[in-house]
Image (cartoon, rainbow, N blue to C red):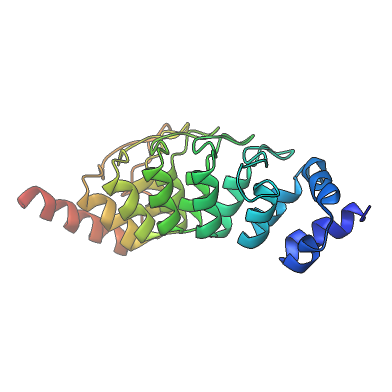
Length: 234
């Protein structure tokens, strides 16, 4: 039997020849292995974006029935879909969704794959997840939606996708902050202006009485006021 360490290294590096050279009994045994983080070999391959290995490990020996546990979570509750979405592996994400991945599965922090796609700026993946039934306003353990995450990292294209797909523009997290507050405090001007153009309230208050305007720089404050005035006039 090949050492488990070698198998995980091959999955991470995308060494298809290694897996193709395994006997069918050895290939079957890889499905029960877990690394120190509690991840399966299939999960490691998905995280690395190794789609040929994902397909090989995911299906039975005839290439038909899906035999991998596509929803198996690691020690922190991450499923392969979380990892592939965070890393930007579109083809792997599509494979997982087409083969039974739970699109709204949450990890120990309450985050779904959509939260990670949003925070990393993976617009194509975010749209694919939403088309597969991802809940656009699902909140994590601190009450943040995917829109909060995209706003905090300044990913304008993902913000646009989320809003297009029905995200609540003034959703509040546990501290009462809206995505606009997050964008303003992080000085993401284009995202902040985009949110205002979609109706975000520049006067909303969080639990500490902060508003998007009070959290903004002088320059951003002026831009937000101008954008808000234009919305009211238009």
